Image (cartoon, rainbow, N blue to C red; front, side, top):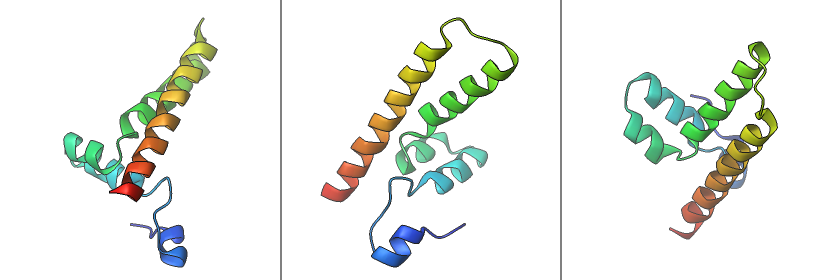
Length: 87
């Protein structure tokens, strides 16, 4: 695993800390642990899949879908980060 540069240099987690380990847990089949490691993982995967599908098949409500998924993902990342700092 690649070390987190922010954590190594400054001593605190960044907004992406846990993402790499979460993806690794998904590949190992540990889906619940992947969510606990990085709660935004599933909305992020869904966002990337939607962007990938739109490359081949043009979706009618593409902008609405992407914006909604992006807002959900960003909100989840920020809430998770705040909870990490507080707890």
